Length: 199
Image 1 (tube, rainbow, N blue to C red):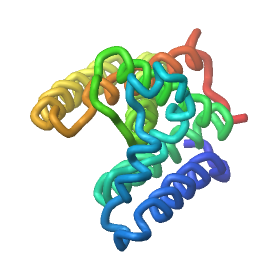
Image 2 (cartoon, helix red, strand yellow):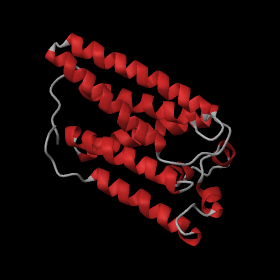
Image 3 (cartoon, rainbow, N blue to C red):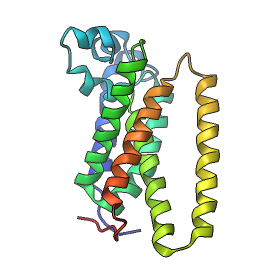
């Protein structure tokens, strides 16, 4: 992995945690105040009324401490790895692209209101998997490529199963949209599979 000082990942992590602390202060940091969630969530009726700013606020809001810490952990793990490979500004673009795809999927197919950074985090995860697969292809190590691909398929199947078990409280299609967005962005950076360099 390329050695480079992280910029995007700690900034985004600090922003998400700061927003959570601000919105949950009156509840002892256990869960966010419902008023903030209502004002900032992403939902189709509000967007149809022209409240497009919710596309910026909803990925910053989290329901409770478990929600924000799980997303913060994923952001730190995969964000740091992605940023070390492609640099801060491209990592930021990748994250934003993933969030956008997550919100598009939510707008088209999820009638319920949604919040959280999960779409961006899943985009970072899928992009990292794409980069690792491309590395094996560049090496010509098809055995390692197939082994990693089998693991990816198993992970995807497990993800779908677990997600649908909690479909009432988890925005499964939003997560899937983020994963697709991240994978597409990563493939675009890799094509035609030249060496990745940080900028």
